Structure formats: structure tokens, C-alpha cells
Length: 123
Image 1 (cartoon, rainbow, N blue to C red):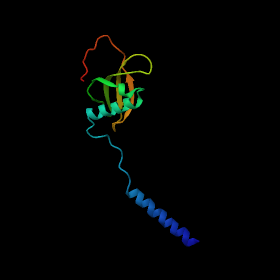
Image 2: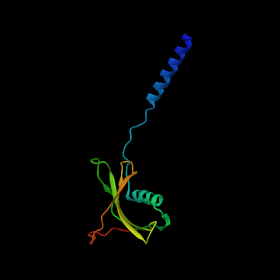
Image 3: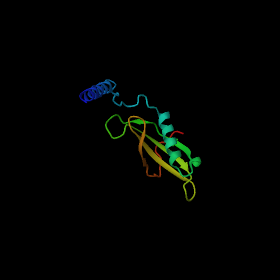
Image 4: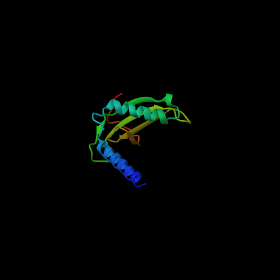
């Protein structure tokens, strides 16, 4: 019985040492996150959440903004798009999508409509 306990202890210690040696590297921000990747993430996000995904039509994009490490999110991009809502006629939305340092969408914020668009969004 004593031999079995000793053998089990040795196996557990060896497994612990092996796991400690192969420790995963800490997460680092995604290097070179580009506007094209952000746009593709937003398109997939919207097509998964719209009631009629085939009705999605892009109207314009802003540039990808890198906020550095000073806030709860790292990148943001503004997107204006048209879609068909569940009830009623066509809808148009203007949203800011927020990304974490790894390039995943953390959330979105609606931009209130304004009478005058000061800066034209690029298609």
C-alpha cells in the first residue's frame, strides 16, 4: 500500500512539473489588426443577428480607430448600413462597433441621427 501511494505521488509530481514547463504564453494583443479584418467581423456579426440577413447592405465605413491600451476596448469602427427590419419598411442604422485587443467584437453603440453629416463615410 505504501509503494502504491509513493508511486502515485511521484506520478503527480512529474505531471505537475511537465505542466509547469509547458505553461501557455500570456495573451497579447492581436498584431496588425487591420480595417479589412474589422469590417469582416462586423459583417459576420450583423448577418448572424439580423432578422433578414440577406437584406443587409453596407452604406459606409469610417476608419479603424486604435485607442491604445487606455480603455475597456482597443479598436472601434463606425458603420452605416441598410437592412429590412422584422416589421415595416427598410431601416438604416449607424453604429459604432467596439473591439477588444484580440479583434473580437465587445459591443456596439448606436449613433444618434443628425441633420448634417459633417464627414462623409467611405464606401
